Amino acid sequence: MAKARFPKIPDIPEEELSPLVAELLDICCLQQDLILSLQEQIQILRDEIAILKNQKPKPKIKPPNLENRPDKKKKKQESGKRPGSSKRSKNLPIHETIDIPPDNLPEDSRFKGYDCFTVQDIVIRPHNTLYRLERWQTPSGDYIVGKLPKELENSHFGSMLVSFILYQYYHAHVTQSLIREELLEFGIDISTGQINRIIVEGKDIFHSEKDEILSAGLEVSRYVHVDDTGARHKGRNGYCTHIGNELFAWFESTESKSRINFLTLLQGRHTDYMLNDDAFEYMVLHKLSKAQLELLYTAS
Image (tube, rainbow, N blue to C red):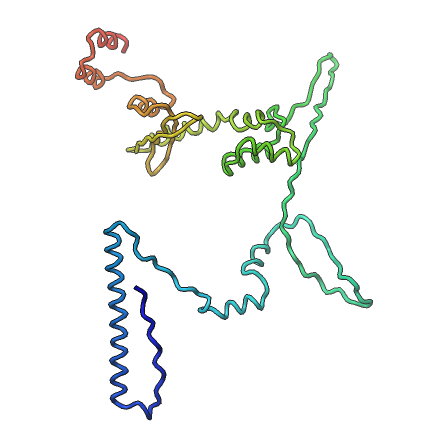
């Protein structure tokens, strides 16, 4: 039910405002306020009924503000600039400056400075570097050869190109085939296998850091939350296990969600087990065979 639009009561001159008319105006104002209040209460009840029926209540739509700020619109038209444009371009680094003189400049004109106009652009081009490793022969006949920078690690692709590939794959979710197509258009000579190796290989340091998150989190935590859910990994159905709390979050993809799988993940890098009195009591309670118990006693 839409709200009723009450007509605006025109101003009545004082000489025509009799006591009866004034009383009628007061009654109209009171009735108008009462109707608006009842409309709001009815809408609240309608929304509650809709929620109980698992339906959506009436949305709260904000009124348009085009009529509320005519001065702001006028100011924008007068300036001719988009709001905030001067602030964003004020501190931009300038890589190139081009001076443009006016056409048909009259003689005896005086120079009065510049009207600056900043244009943002991007330059994407290959940057190939040839490293010439110097070879020197010592008086003893041995050869000494210069070494490549450590960050290259015998790779034919620089750190900026590797960073771009990783950003496109992990952040922008671009497939390897599209990454190769894009790089070929930029003039980069690279194969799909080389892109795959950049994405997959040489990530042991990150896996090690991920493992350290679990061990460090367990050391400072009094409790952890555990959850596992189905997830596809490397094209196969599996499970993703989460261990963490408000201090840390750790995830691992496995093919099982069993209790043994969780205990194995909780151990981290450790693969050994400790058999104490509680462990032996647990095994006796679950009727482990006597021969196996004796073997475990001997081994511990």
